Image (cartoon, rainbow, N blue to C red; front, side):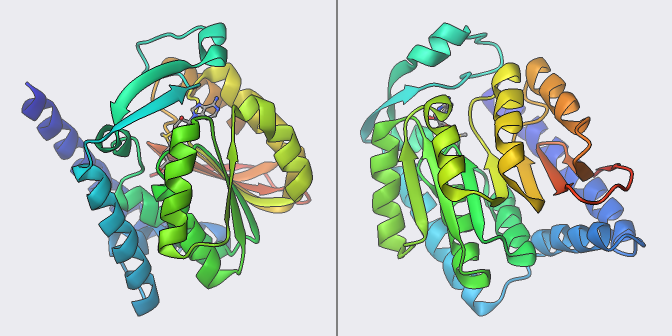
Length: 286
Ligand SMILES: C[S@@+](CC[C@H](N)C(=O)[O-])C[C@H]1O[C@@H](n2cnc3c(N)ncnc32)[C@H](O)[C@@H]1O
C-alpha cells in the first residue's frame, strides 16, 4: 500500500513536471520580462544548470541531507504548527504546541526536496535579495540552500524562524559546519517573534513561509509581513494546496493589490510584489 501510494505520487510529480516544463518553455519568450526571467529560472532548475561554485554548495548540503536520512537518534520537538491536513488542531492546541518524540530521519522528511530547494536557490541567485526571511527552519535544509545563494550572489543574510528549540540547536550546528555565517536563527513561535524580527530587519526583500499551514495563521503572517516588504520583493508560500484552509488562504492572499505577478507551482506559490506599479495582476499556473 505504502509503495503504491509513493508510486502514484511519483507518476503525478513526473506528469506535473513535464506539463510545467512545457508551459515554462513558452513563457520564457513572454513579452513581460519578469515572466520570462522566472520561466528561465524554473527551466534552469529542472535542467540543474549550476556553476562549479553552485555545485560545491549543493553537494555539501545534499551530503548533509543524506546524513539526516540515516540518523535515527531521538529528537524531542515542540510543534506549533498544524501537523497534517486531517489533524484539525485547534488554535489553542497550536499555541500550546505538541511535544513529540521523533527521530532526525523523520524530521528530515519535512525538508524541502532537492528540486524545490534548488528552485529557492535559483530564485535568490536571480533576484539577489539583501535581506531574506524564512518561517520554518526545521533541520535547516532550505535555509542552507537560501543562505548559500545569498552568500554567493548578493552578500545577503537570512533570518530563519523556528519554534522547536531542539531543531534550532541542530540547524545552528549545521550552518556552522557548512560555513554559513549569514544565517540568523530566531527561536520561538512565529506569532511571538515575527513583529520584532520584521522591525529589526526592515525592509525585507524576500520571504519563504514554510511552517504553520493553517488558514488564519497564514493570512495573518502575510498581512503582518506585507508592510515590511521592500517595494519590489518576493514572497513564497509552501503547500498552497495542502488543505482546504491553505487553498482558501492562498486565494485570499492572491487578491492583494500589491502582488503583480503570481506563479502557482501547485506546491509552492511565488508572489512578486511591486508596491509602486499600478499594472493589473497576472496569475500563471505551471
Ligand atoms: C516544513 S518544516 C520546515 C522545513 C524547512 N523549511 C526545510 O525545507 O528544510 C516546518 C517547520 O516550522 C515549524 N513551525 C510550524 N509552526 C510553527 C509556529 N507557529 N511557530 C514556530 N515554528 C513553527 C515546525 O517546527 C517545523 O520545523
